[in-house]
Image 1: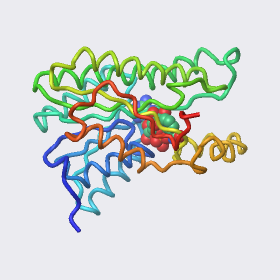
Image 2 (image 1 turned 180 degrees about the vertical axis):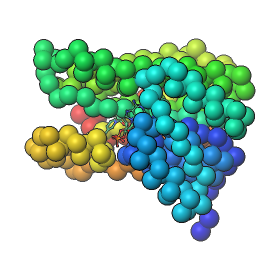
Image 3 (image 1 turned 45 degrees about the vertical axis):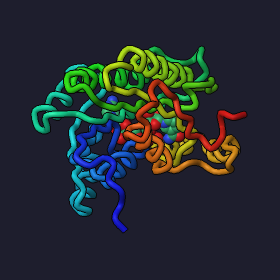
Length: 256
Ligand code: NAI
């Protein structure tokens, strides 16, 4: 059966796309017809694996190494995409780090700056240059990856939770600023998803595995592909009247 092609001829960028949610999203976009899915990530070996997967499966995947917390890197990424493809239709700002697990009074300044730099400044920088491209062409769709920790507090993760609340503030503000321009900006708030990030957390604190399952009303952790499908819908024309929305993809967690 031929898969539907809602992203046919679209040029898309996914930051943090060499692992977990970003990887599942980039692959799904390429499978659904994207002319090119540009995976932008700091991890060079992850980028190489993603491109190899694309080559094996005849998917149009390109890679670009960058640090999303660097303005110079992000500006270069968008310029490279525009120079090569002439347009940018969709962007998924997903790159993120968890940082240290410590109560607020023990959170180091270094951890605060690093988490904010990647998770919040990185999303702002990505939006800044993506928006310039999309405004010039009069169309585009952006999805930012926040978290359930962007809606409620998350004990031991103050910098992470603050950064993810900030992502929703950026998303809603930009959605209002550009509502009349043909550019839509939305966010997803995933619950506990099985990725390298949660693997790292469970490795540090094994009791988290059981905790993640208990926290999810559906009784299991989510899969990256389940978040990817929500992101694809928000990016697509199916969601043409949706902007400024923060979609919970969390197995019911935020319904408590
Ligand atoms: P992951 O660790 O599997 O993937 C994160 C990706 O971001 C990696 O490929 C990593 O190399 C990249 N990255 C990290 N720092 C970067 C930087 N400075 N510049 C460019 N790329 C960078 O983690 P996962 O779980 O797929 O996370 C993706 C997003 O989803 C993150 O923003 C995370 O906060 C968010 N999220 C994850 C949840 C989960 O339970 N896994 C729950 C809620 C939100």
